[in-house]
Length: 323
Figure: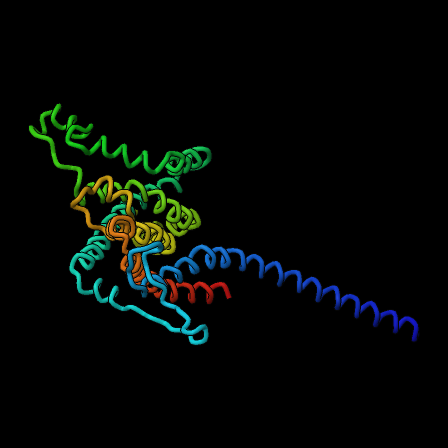
């Protein structure tokens, strides 16, 4: 009996070690799974942002690089730090930069609203199609990504210019006698943004709408709810995650867009992305441009916090339901 008891103890100890090893493997796998995306963001977002933040406190000089170092050693012993706040004060005092921020936020908000109004019925319509038809519709949404972004924006120049396809068609059918000014204004920029970022709105909306159980609609119909009312009271609230995800994916990059305002907006467009390009590459004022980038990050961080606050109560309720 003593022999079997000792064997049993050894087996139990070995089994405990095996379980511990398995737990360590699972923890290691989870750590790697989490570390990869966080490491990616750390390397390609946080580190460049810290470099830009350091440059924003430097003084602009004529040289290469065109800014003075903010850290220097005195007699090789004492570390001297020279922080220049003049760049931020200049940005806050100059009306041009304030106007460019407000213009960027306004155009991005209009473009995001347009993408939501167009993308929601498209995404909902795709979810109502079954089989191969749904795959084909999703491929049509993704298809523009197979073409160069620059070529697609240049195509809008051919459509919106005074001698473009739209003006020629309107003149030929007699609706207008002179070409409309569709280019080199905020209207063209908004159209370009909606066209370019519409797939980024459709895809998260589709992912959210596709998970909704259609029996909810049937229950609403059985209770006497009309289709339109059921859509707004059942489908729309259940797809809030897709709405918030699509809005963030469109609004945030649209604020800092550079290519579309440059090609379609002309000289009248003063979106912040265009201002940043001019400060970096024409004026060669890297500290001022870096301060604009930092303030743009702060401006964009506010809507991120806002959307996070919206998601928090829903996340808590979801966790309670799952428990």
